[in-house]
Image 1 (cartoon, one colour):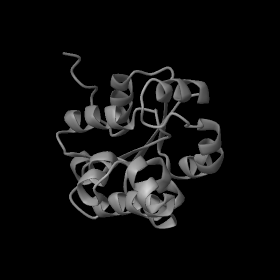
Image 2 (cartoon, rainbow, N blue to C red):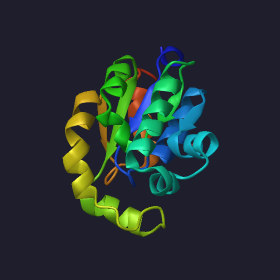
Image 3 (cartoon, rainbow, N blue to C red):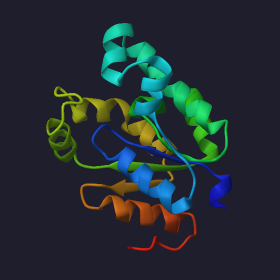
Image 4 (cartoon, one colour):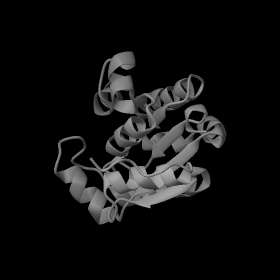
Length: 169
C-alpha cells in the first residue's frame, strides 16, 4: 500500500523531479521532501553554493545523506538529486521504494536548464553518460517528460501503485 512504501523521483536536472514529486505527494496525501530545500536547511546553501564552498564530493555526500535519512523515516515522496544514484548505499536503500525515473532527451533538459539560472553550463549528455546505468538499475518506472506532463507522470505513478488516477479538478 502506498502509505507504507516511499516513492523516490530521480532524474537529471531539468527533468521535473520537484514538480512531479509535489503532484505525487498531494495525490497520495504524504509529505514531500526535496533535496534543494534540504540542502538549504541542513547545509546553508544551494547545490551550486555548497559545491563552490566545499566541493562536489561534499555536495554529493549531502545529497545522498538526504535520501538515506528520508528513507529511514515515515514513507513519503522524495525528490532526489541525480548524484544520489551513484552512491551504492543509496541504490541498495532504494530497493524498498518505488523509484520513478523522470527523463527526457538531452536537448529538452538543456533547454529547460537554460531558461533558469540554476546551472547555465549544465551538460545533460555528460551527466547521462555518468548516471544513466544507475537510473536504469534502480528505476521501477521510467517517464519521458519530454512527452508526458507532470500530471501524466503523477497518474502513471498512481497506476503503478494500483490506485486510480488523480481527480483532474
